[in-house]
Length: 202
Image (tube, rainbow, N blue to C red; front, side, top):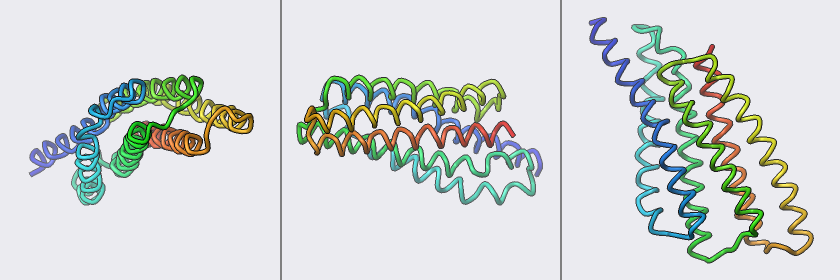
């Protein structure tokens, strides 16, 4: 029974890893769609996000029941909930980018550069976050924490710069609202990745 439980535990950890690992490709796809205004690249993104959201919610419900038989699962209890929030915000980002493309909402060159940079930083955070699910490496955790702090600071700085552009009339209110919503989603993704790293390194 114990051996079977261990195998089942490994399957759950691998499921969490796949949910975290696939965020990288999802972001890369969104980034390309964002830069080149290509709506076709976003086709199926909502379906994929929904699939992972359902999977994360399911694991969030069932993992606590396995802890009594396998204490090794204890650090993973909150991981599915954080992955759920990550995928919710990825889904939100995809929708915002789709709206931008569909309604032909233009960003300033600075806003495009800033968003692209933050997408790149997200990939740099989420890649080691997926590795943390398997390795629970302290070095990776410290890197994720530092990177999340950098993203938080840069997003706040970009929001201030954007507000100044808005005041100067360099961007439209509709693009402003979209841009700020994207910044918030990006910050949230980075924060939940950081929380995963904290839980798995404790």
